[in-house]
Image (cartoon, rainbow, N blue to C red; front, side, top):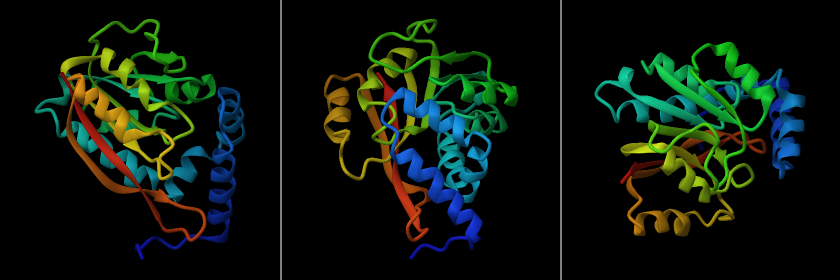
Amino acid sequence: MEETKELSKKDKEMMVSFYTDLAKVTTKEDIEKFYKKHINIYDEVNDICQYRQSAVCVLAKKLANLFPNVSSKSVIDIGAGTGLIGKELSNLGFQTIDGLDMTKIMLDECKKTKVYRNLYETELTLSPTKGIKDDTYDAAISVGCFIGTHIPLETLEEITRMVKPGGYIVYALKDPDFTMNYMEVQGRFMKEKKLQLISMVLEKHRLECENFEFLYAYQVIFKVL
């Protein structure tokens, strides 16, 4: 059993309510309703369930470690949310950070962090994202999107378009029921020589809401070819 911090009854109830509602999300409208309901406790829940500590901070550091000098590198935060990743990237020395999210309410929170250069209110699809040219970024990062209900993994095609050859795509992948067919999808990009797998490691992601033990997710690093 993983060692975790002691949670209060209030903490547990908050987590259960938050993630029970999140599990029901299937459409853009659902996502917007979810965030409107939980925006005031969003960051607090992420701290309680150790998502910030276990997923956000660790993945941001992995990205930073790929570059000898992060201050000169540009990165896009896919599914920027309230800006948790953006703030961590800024703390690590990144100075050029853009964010993308489909909901205005979350981008309004991102603006408050004052670490983002550009913010794009749009859904990530297989079509080119308006306003983002080919080979714009040195890296892309996503922590909470590839979880089966948010963004299809096939959108790696669009993320690859955004990132310069030689750059990196770093993301968390949590799909215990294999609904995303992630091995086949990722394998196709490698077979087509669009991406090179650098690492795919199972790491702590956050506490779950039944026994309040850790859930694990893959932390994936691809190099764009």
